Image (cartoon, rainbow over all chains, first blue to last red; front, side, top):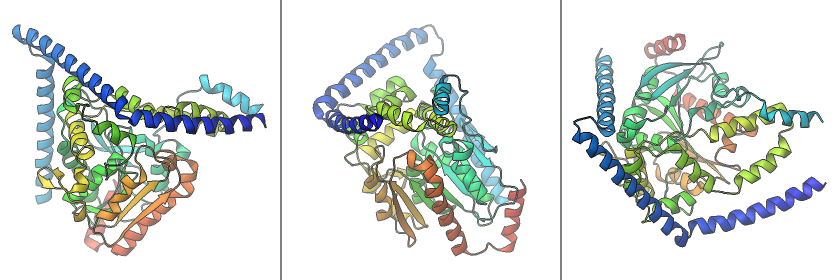
Length: 92
Length: 356
């Protein structure tokens, strides 16, 4: 009985609060600065990464990005080979 | 008192046995795998196999959650030949994976591989959430191997009043700087975003959990769903960028300006039987966003199934096993029956596929 009353009250609170929060989180006054802050933080991280990359590249060493590109190229190559195998199988 | 004891075991319980329906990996490429659920002992009844395409940001096992709550196991038990894509976990080098790589390359290969194992050289494709969007785009460009399209809570109209739409459309959110700095979009960021869709949901789940989790079955179900919900995977960077910039911001799919590998992806090009399943209380994909598919496709055989429930709950709950799942199985069976029997020569392929 007590639990049911609590749950009723809780559900009403939850619905109202969720409604208010949704309005707030969709409002341009919240979204604008949040989006700008996130973008600024990402740009700062990218700048720091670029600085690190040029340091390693200056030493003649492959950077993380170089390795990522190579691995991706290998994966693409594997996919192209599979495409060819598929075409061959179709012709058989 | 017994219920209280059950509840008290939550801390000492082993992780729930998710994704346990027996399956074999029939293809592996980069991180993704194509799984085939082992057919039931009594054999396959329906000629056209089924391909399940989960969302790119979630684990595939939502459709095979627990032994008694498994969509895949249910379909196997109904005599379907069921395949599923497991996208795997994108790692750093996958930041360069494009939308075309995933949709045309990976989904395309999965569809062809599954179709080849059937007598009709076609497969029923079921896409869930973003998986449904991928399936719709793929079908609109390369319809040959798709016997039917079933979009389960799949967003098609991205200009809606949902939270995700509002967030991604804000011009001060620079997607390129996000993917440039992080590569793939980390699962943590995605998870926070999903939790912010309804910040009070955690408290609400806890209260409703106390209401139901007095039995082993309910407790295990709750834990499995929570485990899946917190088990997101990173979104490949280049793919995410196009997804947000073209689909969310320009609503390119509905506008008819989206392309796949340079070819126009127009929903009007979809002519195969199409079923869109939408959920009344879906906060992740508001139902009008998913319902737009049926309005756009030119299939003669198209319908929308609108059900009460939420984005996940309505698909994996015990209620879904008695309402949604049988209707999906019957829908596929009816499309197979309407297509008529495959010719004898091709039927031998079905027999050999069953044996494999």
